[in-house]
Length: 288
Image: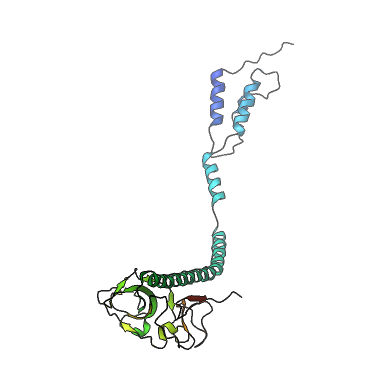
């Protein structure tokens, strides 16, 4: 029996079939054997069996770009429930973190204020010794326009929150040594007699602005009052040595209220001044 001769397909037809297979078919089954049906199975003895394998491989690799993009978007998206869970977790964490951060910020502001006051009083005493001039310390009381509830026309709302050094001239005048030193926002001097004798002690008088040319910043201008004391040329002060309990000033955060008439807030700073030597000593509550 004569062996039948199988004629291979023309090259142009094979190329066309391969091209058709590689085009994405978005409307049907990606595994549709439409191109393979034009070729017999590859049995190893067909001259175009290699091309059949190429066609089948390309057909299996067909992927619709629109389907792939849609699938990626679906995998990347979050459901409403997932978003609500994440938001709830963030809110819970923030609820625990905010009070702790607020406490740290208040403590930091109080530390800055205490260091500022200590340094300035020490500098005032040193200037009195080095210049052989009396140095006056003025502690200012005024209403901060940026603090709710403090009214310029209502003195009972004013707070002691700034101070300044002056050099006393031979004519009896006072020349500023440095700019006004203001405590960080929220920190004030406690004006109670039990907490700050330097403000409310014997002989301490609250004076109105004596020098109208001296203006305080932040819109205060000359709408303020102050108490003062002096470092003498030998480093001592003009404070009465007989003051009961000594001379001291307490600073705290204005939102921290004292626990009683003689009990300071939980976090405070007290600076004691020796009227004879002019030296200072600091006190702060210990943790625990």
